[in-house]
Image (tube, rainbow, N blue to C red; front, side, top):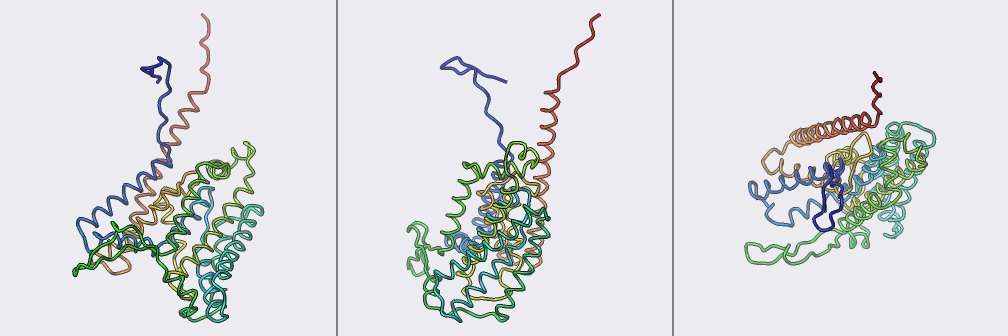
Length: 365
């Protein structure tokens, strides 16, 4: 339906409807805001102080990075369940290098990036060019990373490297209005860990890549319909390969951010991180079928997942199964919403296709 503009009197096309990606992102943001308001007004237990939320973000900075990489792979229609194993491998490798070999912190960072790139190149090649199912390839990668972590060192230990401890204990001080006062009137400034800064930079870069670059459009095209993307001249194999390389590279970076937070090496580190990354991506609006997703939604997906865990603990349900049940309920709700949106999209596409079919002419009398 067309409308006339009041100033020029020209025909003006109506505004396009909200896309599925934007709709799912909006739902995620609304859910997060609703949960935070509930925690702020109903529970209060520390949620009235901004530092509480900042601590949650600092604790889950590595998960934000992992979930962003997972979203890229899921947008192309794939999946990567090796990110948790890569995180543990990076953490253990850097811990052994710094603590037992007197290594340099900056070289440890390069080591983390190198481990991530190695996994990404190998897994991406197997998935993109040898056509092996991404679930099988990354499952093997997860087992390999976990096994290699145990081979490097079997027992957990804390890192005593002075340069690393100084880096680990560094904080970014935020503006004073985010700080708080103790009961004795002493002002405590709000701070975040350095890993949060890294995570937010990655979120910003990936948001720009997905929204305004050719590579980002290729990710959506390949995930939406790989055959159509191929007919449009998109190199689908290279696009899938790049998505896996970026995902594993981010797993390496996220592994070092995790290492900076815990300050130790252990074979049990980051257990279940891949499942949390997948859950965060889904809650953030990334569809398992591919073609739909948003990095901002993924960010709020991580925050929603972390916030609900803290809310469950604050109401007195400290048992681990209550957290699992709550997360499962959230996932079910968001999967149902995604299913409704997919059904709506299919119905709309069928109507458009039917409208383009020429109607048969009536026979002349």
